[in-house]
Structures are given as structure tokens and as C-alpha cells.
Length: 273
Ligand SMILES: C[S@@+](CC[C@H](N)C(=O)[O-])C[C@H]1O[C@@H](n2cnc3c(N)ncnc32)[C@H](O)[C@@H]1O
View (cartoon, protein in one colour):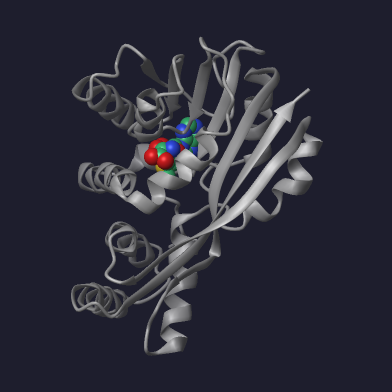
């Protein structure tokens, strides 16, 4: 068995796994800490009144809905994702939240976008780049479709920093590493961007890091563990009974206020000249 990033191979998942992904993405978007990380770059976008914004790897469209609800955004958004199921969900959530007139969604591959060049004022990849088959190709496409002078934003985690507190430190490190391997095709890609972005014609104008940390209770890390622990088992990285007892102990620690979980996230804002 080999690790198969569930987002990279989303079109091969069964209905139950897809339901877990939809729930995870929507649950994560409701998390205040995580939502603030989107706002932190959105408020720096400095968009013109009729701006067109593209999100590649939009999933259920939560970031596009955030954008549509911002007071400083009067333009339109387009979300592209490779999963027809996630695109249907994105359209439904946009209708439910009365923003469907501002944001549209369509199926597509971020490696080869069926969109004309020089089109968008901003192009966003929000936790996409860690999952794709070829990050340089995807960033090259983002650089192609953004207008000259427009902004490319890449936001993602550095997943060797993903950690769950565990009284048995050896087991904890083994599970942290297994979760990163099973869930992300490119767990360390955010370290490569200072080199990669200029090679692809993009000039970084702002970049920063944030730690997502939960101490005591756990919400962000609860849905992460529940969604992706099965991927560790499926990849054969850790025996099922060990993963299950680790997960049970994590959920119990959250319920009893003894939980610790953390991961570093990075944001790069770059311009195409
Ligand atoms: C972690 S989710 C992020 C979803 C959304 N950006 C958010 O933050 O809620 C990653 C998404 O990337 C999509 N994805 C992965 N590889 C892709 C590709 N090559 N082209 C388009 N979408 C892709 C997956 O289908 C999944 O919806």
C-alpha cells in the first residue's frame, strides 16, 4: 500500500470519504482561527471595484463565499476544482448563502486551466498546492491567468510542523509523520516558494507565517484527525489498532480539556509583472 493524498485523488474516493471531505472543509471554514487567516490576506488584496478573482482548488467554495461577503469586495469570483461532487456542493452552498450571483464554480484541473491568459486581478490557491501532482505547473498556470500587475496568493501549511500532543512521544512523532505523509502529496512545498515563485515570473511582495494552535479543546484538529486518520490506515503506515487508539485518546483529551495540537501555515503574496 502507498500513501494516496485524498485531495489529489478526490475523484477516486467513495461516497462516505467524499462526505467526510465536504464536512471537513465546511467545518474548517467555520473555525474562527482559520477564517482569520483568509481575512489576513484578503484585506491586503487591494482590488479594483469590478475585480475578477479566481480560486484554484476551491473545494466546497468556502473561501469564495468568504470573499463575496467581504465589504471591501464588489467584484466577482470563480472557483475551479477537479471534483464534480465538490463543485456541486460549492454551487449549493453559494445559493444557500445568497452569494451565487457573485461567485461561480466549474470543474477543471489546476495544472491546465481552460481559461484565457491575463484575465484575473487575483488568483488564490488556499491549501491546494500541498496536494497537487506538480506544484510548479499549477503555479505557472496561476501566473498565466493573472493580469500583469495582478496578485497571486498561495496559502498552505508546512506539514512537518503538524503535531498532536501525545504522552508517548515516539508514537506521537510517528503519527504526526504518518498523517503528513498520508494526507499531503507535497507536505514541505511552502519552503520551496521563495525559490519557485521568481522562477515562474512572480515577485513576492509580502509573505508571513501563522501558527494554528489549539490548547485544551480541539475543533480544527478534531475534524483533521477524524477525516485523515483513515488515510494513515489505508496507506498501511501505522497498524489500524494503533491509529484507532491514538484517535480515541486525542478525542478524549479534547473532551477533557487536555488537548494540544499545532501546525504552521504560510502565506505568499506575489505579483506578476
Ligand atoms: C484542502 S482542499 C481546499 C479547498 C478550498 N480551497 C478550501 O480551503 O476550503 C484541496 C482541494 O484541491 C482540489 N484539487 C486537488 N488537486 C487539484 C487539481 N489538480 N485541480 C483542481 N483541483 C484540485 C481538491 O479536489 C480539493 O477540493
